[in-house]
Length: 212
Image (cartoon, rainbow, N blue to C red; front, side):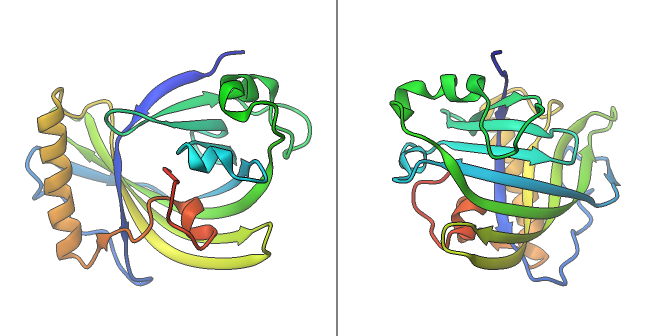
């Protein structure tokens, strides 16, 4: 079964454990915000022994919990990245479905993929709406704990993700301007652009190659 594709455009920020998401109604184009209850997410990440997926800026994960639970493949794109979704299936959580592997067959070249890290997140979403009530962006306020399954190393931190939603502006320049405005408010509240490009990179104590 082929996966459902969407484009994901987001920015990530490191924040202190006690930080609160600021009032973002001062951002141009944002008329109101809606804060939701925290939701636990559990994600298992996969790669080959020589991490060929990371070397090609690709991620496979199995996520349970939240509105988008399922199998995800993240691929580089011109703007943001392409995320491909498949539903969860019965069977072992550490057995990647054939459809997911087939999508990456040219990269894997027959290599086996095995669990790389587990990431547990308590995610609190803040939706940003325009004057018409359309969701233009969301802030994911994440409390993260991870286990590097190959090195048996545990890490924990707090981060924010600002992601555009379907109601975001139509042009790339306008989308960039919206994210820039959101970033200014987040930085003023104590956030700083993330020191790592992806949760999985930080879980492994590395920064190279990953896109999350």
